[in-house]
Image 1 (cartoon, rainbow, N blue to C red):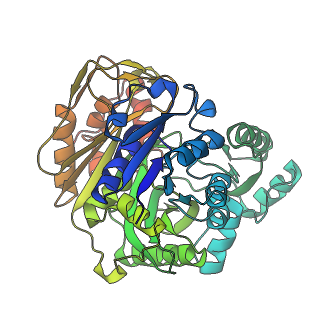
Image 2: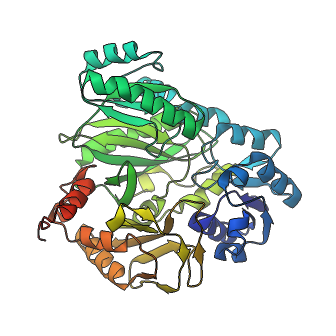
Length: 457
């Protein structure tokens, strides 16, 4: 097992990794930017090292500074968390060249599954269902037009690299497709330094269901069942739950097994999430593979009792998986609400600033992952996620009831947050009945803006 690891991240995920490492008897080193100099999570690390100014491009994205900090602190491994460099295969390769273990997949596995086109090829080879679409990156617009005519509109233009909804455009006819290819490529180049895009069939009224998989360095892999992440706004998840409600157990089992085989075939070691869209007939189509720990991993931990972050560290240290598929079972239901420092009533405008009122919820089955406390100033340089509120119940009804109560207790001020939005969502009949899709939240917000009454629960 490692003696000391460096955490190349910030916020709640940095604190989450610190806690996991402590339970394993591992020392932690946190790097931080000048904007995070007084951040609360730094108090819990064994050592801290400043790596630059506030902007991520000058600190958390600087591979040279992170590696220098790792060498100065004499660490055994680096945990990248999520975001920043977590899915950067070059960074994973630099770690290996410097004889520092990367707590995640090998550069080769990350490159194979992180690139959406090579990931689609791997899916075809393992029988994992995918949408009809490109086998290679689109070379010119006419190629995209020809392909779209073959598979039928609507289609979606997607960046081969990156994620988070960037470099994606839906086209419902040839005119919009011609514009979408250039716009998606330009956005992808700016966001990921790679403007390559491809085209695939776009599924309307879909649900977003993903499979959590763990693989080790000994050729073993298991799945931890599924999560529903359909509550989204502009491809950004706001609420997740596990297991996905209403899914046929046979179809769930089949798609989970295909995801495990895909991860095993890639020689993948670590935590991976295979994301799917599911249509009304519960046919699954793979979207992509996230080669890192997910923001929503706590709901899976709550229903399986498996600590995903600790397991990642053990895998990176060379330990074989200590769990077999037959031993993993679902217990109850879990829901996670992402609490963002944003004002939903004003177009989700970010809300940086001083937090003076911070009252946390509690009670049976309530978990709060956050780095915030009263007196903390939310910086302007980073993502607006400031907390993850997770609840667990014997079934989905109890989980919803517990989330209502927890949201009622949770107070953050004077900044605006998404707490109120989540509380309204808990009373929507389509959500309660699990009759929603990836566009439901946007329709709900549109109806609220138009002054329409919500469907009563």
